[in-house]
Length: 261
Ligand code: GLP
Image (cartoon, rainbow, N blue to C red; front, side, top):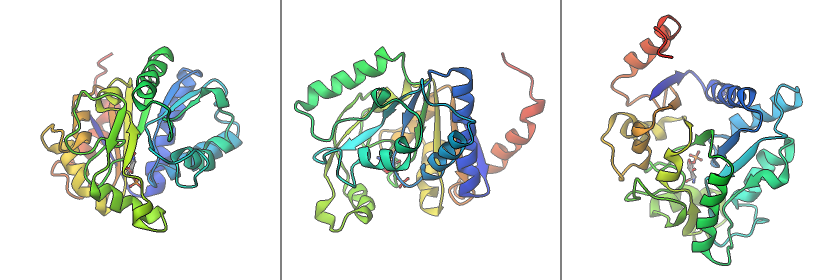
């Protein structure tokens, strides 16, 4: 796990966009795993900017989103379908047939989840998975207690998550209580993972995810078992990390380190 501490939200977004650009440069038909939430908004704005500057081409890229609320149609302004169109897909040249999100209103949830997993596998698997982190340490909607081997399925949202998300809805009772989410096991199969976190309210979950024990109580801690993870955080989100000086030392020494290739 590499921990990269940046000075600002803009720098976190730039560093994440550099990773996406690197993956697409190496493999124009890359499969990207995408996240919602406020945190990746700066990354998406930067990807749009680079596309407009003709630095990035998404024409052969495939995307799979992590999750969607159950019960919200794609046209609902708080659905993750709507969020992704508004903040990314409508502004880049990704082919509509290459975009995948869990359905908000599937006919048969269980069959849908199985097919979502099959589609990820049929695409060759996710090359780069982008993640945020919930205030309870969740990734996607893998709430505390989620099996670290879990696959795409329906999850009941934690009360704290419903409260966190109520800022986007007029009334708290409008916040959906269920979501279809990729599992922790699904996420761990991505070839590379970047998790973004900014702001003091993420300091606790980030410390638990990076330096705490691996536990289903903080599903982000499962990333400690993944071979290629970048945790890109700002100084506020890094403020409870005990080893922050070491992580910064590693970054300084990076260019001098012997190659392991
Ligand atoms: C939701 C999403 C997560 C996201 C989290 C944090 O729970 N399912 O994927 O990481 O919100 O959101 P924010 O970035 O707004 O703090």
